[in-house]
Length: 281
Ligand SMILES: C[S@@+](CC[C@H](N)C(=O)[O-])C[C@H]1O[C@@H](n2cnc3c(N)ncnc32)[C@H](O)[C@@H]1O
Image (cartoon, rainbow, N blue to C red):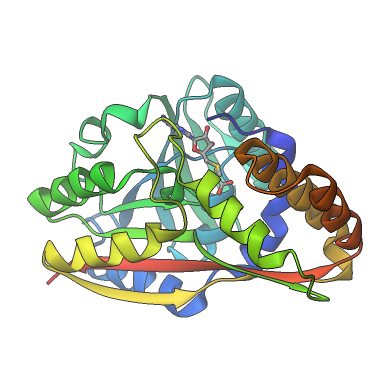
């Protein structure tokens, strides 16, 4: 499934605002415990897009960080390189890898184009201090999540994922079609996104249960998008995306769906997500 750099850019501010601070602190405390002798933490970011997860977490993760950004979309990896260079105070080094200076931190970044649909074993093989991802796991199937968590557990790796959609959408003002739209959107979310039938809105719960079964201690916290008048551009695009997805399911009458979209103009709302940090018990 492909995502545009424009969409990821539109959501980045709201994503960073939504990130749960307690779960971030738990991940940061873990990194303080395991930091390598030279003080560097090694982190792998799955489905990195344009690098938003790094920009959202780096401030909490200490003075010396080494990130490997993984995505299968070469255009997004190129955009990540460009956006991270602009975001940093200074870019050191050339060639394929970047060394960024930001707020006194040294952040080495390498990029890997890889399709994760067959699993993530290869990209976690060198045992990073943390495996992370943002806004990714609702695309995965329960079977993929099961294999992935078994792979983490076999290597005793810590895991931090943010903004896993949990299906709790609430819009103001309420509309009679809300329940039908939410149900049809959830059905679309469960379609195959390249990893087998997706967990969709059940992804957060599936991850927590699977990690618990795999012997992990887990910290969770809500990270809802709270969309107000200042987020009108993102809300409009989000509503358009929901309408397109619901339309594809043919579960809601087209005319009624157009009415729902019109009524949602200028709407405010909340989209539920869960953040998770897990380390082997
Ligand atoms: C919703 S976006 C999130 C991007 C980024 N983590 C963020 O928070 O902005 C999902 C990302 O997963 C990537 N992705 C989807 N399927 C993939 C696959 N099979 N292998 C690797 N990356 C994939 C997409 O290219 C996209 O960058």
